[in-house]
Length: 134
Image 1 (tube, rainbow, N blue to C red):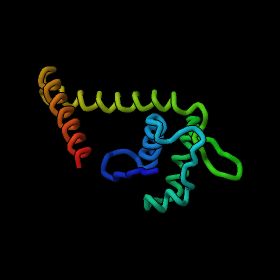
Image 2 (cartoon, one colour):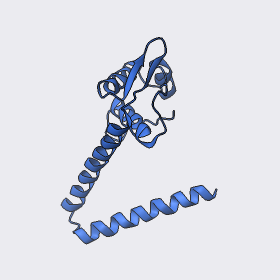
Image 3 (cartoon, rainbow, N blue to C red):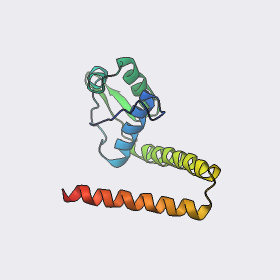
């Protein structure tokens, strides 16, 4: 499992872990029954405090994404995918609303925002195609 922590994105580190694991479950990268790294292992890999990982794992257990499998560790729970799909949609929607609000307050009208959005979407698509060709 590959997680990336960005100390400058404005989200707490534990929240970044929670979101990325939920997105991985939503994408099917993590499937039901898959074991997640231990607290110590993930903390070492990300070079962060183990308490931060433990907090993220507790949140994921509270959200019924992870469950404890006695003697093994934490695994993705059987009903995790559907709520993770909904959470991903909700979280991304909230971030988009923030960006749209900032654009609106910045003086852009609806058509300018649409054009900017389409340009960025096209750039993402083009960059993805370039990456696949390599």
